[in-house]
Amino acid sequence: MIKKPVVVQISAGAEARPVALLVQVASQYESKIYLETENKRINAKSIMGMMTLNLTEGEALTVSVEGCDEEAAADRIEKYLTGRIAS
Image 1 (cartoon, one colour):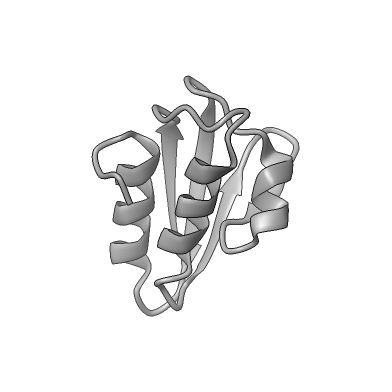
Image 2 (cartoon, helix red, strand yellow):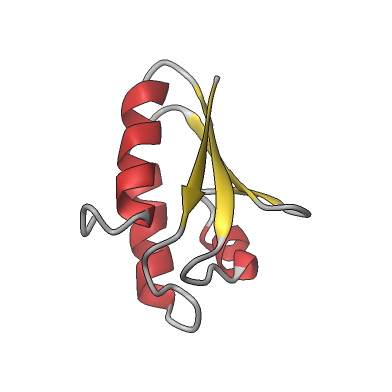
């Protein structure tokens, strides 16, 4: 299992598109991927769950990944959330 602290650098707040793209990125991997805040743990492959997370730019969270491709998945999700890749 990999856990990475990440500060969100994409503006995902009111827009559904960045969240939908994040779900698409997460869905490319077999690993279980969760985004964790102080009081929520959301499956990154669930569009409905991700919409309830209400990500905001500058928010700190933890990316938790477990599975056969966890290193690649954790790296890609971190890069997406920090704005280092578009999708």
